[in-house]
Length: 151
Image (cartoon, rainbow, N blue to C red; front, side):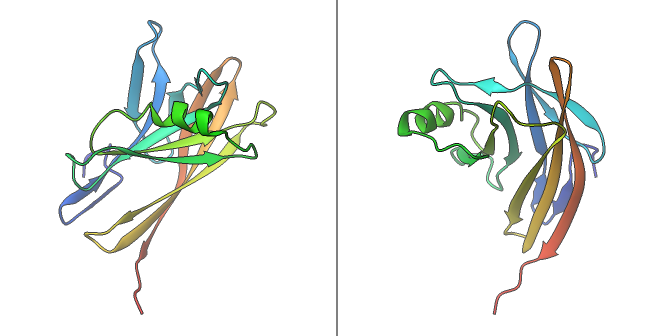
C-alpha cells in the first residue's frame, strides 16, 4: 500500500487530500497520512464564508465531483452555498467544506466519514486542524473502519 493510500480494497483505494495555497496563490493539494501534519489554508468565498476543504476520491474517477458542506454553527444563505459549490472542479472527487466560525479555537477537531461500497466498509476519521501564527496544519489523528451491516 502506498503511503498516500489510507485504505485499499477490491477496486478502490482511499486517498484523503488537504488543500492549501502556495506562495504564488495557486491551489495545492496534499495527500494526508496518518499522524503527519500537512499545510492547509482556509478558503474564503466572495460572500464571506471561511473554512477548510478536504477531498477524497470517488470509486469511479470519471464521475462528476460532489460536495458536502459542514457548518460549525452558522446558517448559510443560498448565495453562500452556491459560492462554496462552485469550488468543486476535479471529476472523481468528493469535497468536504468545513465552515469555521471566526471565533473558533485551535486545535480544532473535525470529523470525517465515507463509505467504501465495493468493499462494504464505513471509514471514519478525525482531522485535527491547528494554527501556528498565521499558518495552519491538518493531521489525521485516528481512522476507524467498520463493516457495513444490512439487516
